[in-house]
Amino acid sequence: MAGDDFGSTIRGRGERWARRGMSALLAPIMVVLLAPSFVVIPMSFSKSLVLSWPPQGFTLAWYAKLLASDEWVASAENSFEVALAATMIALLLGVPAGLALGLRDWRGKQLVLALAMVPLVVPTIVMAIGMYKVYATIGLIDFWGLAVAHAMIGVPFVVVTTMSAARQMNPLLPLAARSLGARPFSVFLHVVLPGVAIGALSGAVFAFVTSWDEVVIANFLTTPTFQTIPVQMWSQLTQGVDPTVAAMATSLFAVTMSLMIASIWLRRGRA
Image (cartoon, rainbow, N blue to C red; front, side):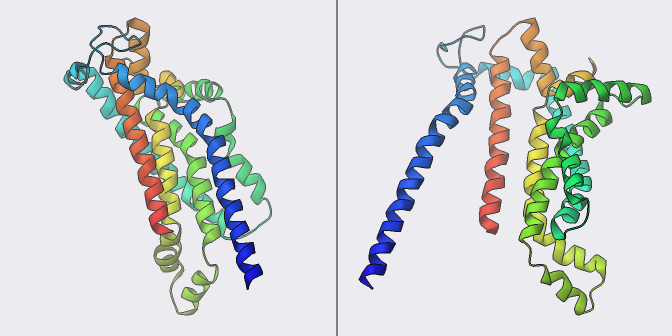
């Protein structure tokens, strides 16, 4: 008994030191990744008429200007609608693919998974040029062209998270439902879909955020009369910079972080 207690104490200390070491390694990485965002936030409250560091004073005038601007409001509405449509398309394509890849093994599975990940590997500018040539030929520029393009880069996230959730399901549950007389569609709707819902939702969050702040493809597939927030920000940066851009960047950051935190909270709640 004493030996077991001693061993447990040693293991507990080892785990604590491992967590501390991991935290020490991750801390500088998080600082490097988040520092640019935290630099932009104070600049959005600066009284300076140009975007500068360090910020001077404190004001909410740039947020008021943001809300009063028809161009910024229209671009925000466009971004939200495109991201929502892209997310719906990504779910329609990614959830069935994730289920097929996660529920059972079959020949060619790894090849299909690799093909599904292609949008994450191919340089965005290459995809943007190809999409522009194809979509311009068939007249699919503006809203639906951009929504479909953003859905393509959102599908891999839905596939991966749905596949991961499907692998964690008890494979006997669908079989038990079928043995009790449930039809295949009922099994899918009441057993399989609830089992992967949190995973699919996590993928949907990633797909939405990816579309929400994507700028390279959007620059090719938007027009002067239809622009998203990132394209509008890019245009403002090339014409003349005032802290309104920082205010919009801060708003984008807040929306993105809120969605990511909500996704983590949902997954923990389900666990």
